[in-house]
Length: 403
Image 1: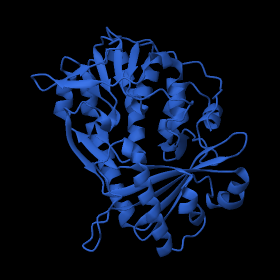
Image 2 (image 1 turned 60 degrees about the horizontal axis):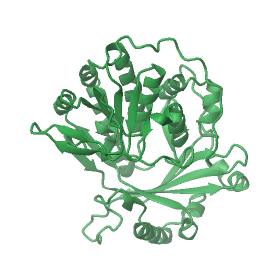
Image 3 (image 1 turned 30 degrees about the vertical axis):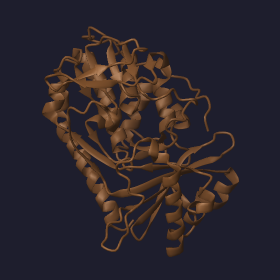
Image 4 (image 1 turned 90 degrees about the horizontal axis):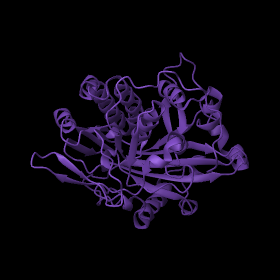
């Protein structure tokens, strides 16, 4: 559903000039939400930066993350200000159609579904030339134990006095990592497209009152359907569907072939793994009489034509003193987003925190050149911990209680 996003930007707010600009450009490692939000904020405030990412340049406008995120009203308003978009422009460009309407200033508890790929496209749209794609950064340890960054020879290594690690769970900078838990949940996400006539006839009434997501529980297995996008001209609907269940570890269970916590990133789309998943769906259908629309969506013969990915539910936490020690080292590395606290992908709280981090850290740089970043980290530590623990316990309750 790629295309060109056209809208008229509002005039930026007048508080864009740094009070104490940093003495050198800022290096940003990674190209996820925290990296792009930070970069967009810095660009708006006229602070130079460079992004280094091992990812390849997206071929289409937003084919990298073609799914939606559920974000609270305060994050929506912050993004609208950052992107200088009117309510109408934001609604028509980023909000998923048929879902919750745009929030009023008092609608703090409201959550809306935003297309992640389109959001990332708009965030990076003004600084594509500042991104070094396919840049694999290596890490060596100094005698002190602190990391030293090794950039590829083909890359112009920018000498900066602040480096932000926004690479999340896949960051090679492991110095401050304390613990990582992979929640014992098997989760597969699929993607299908529905014509407007099929959507109107079979699906639309299943998503009442601007609902963007429905789910139902069958035993311990949860089936979910999520509206990700609607084509503005043809009305074609892109729908994500998710199949998740706890790991099989009972005394009579055979080894769970779909529980692969040590798989590589490339193996997330392994044809062998996806084949085993479709075999399980066949057995699942024999054990449960699925109502519509789940019966049509979770049909293994139809699913063979869809794109599938295996998702791991990672929860990790960094050590605060080590984060500060890392920040005071020669490389001046400061971690952001899920490089500090990572939350499961089923929960979009991690995306919410990543966006907030990018915006707030840019504000810190404007105010004091980033000299007080360690204080910002300490002051927000309890909030981060609360988000992480709340996300973890919601995941537990998800499979313990009835949907």
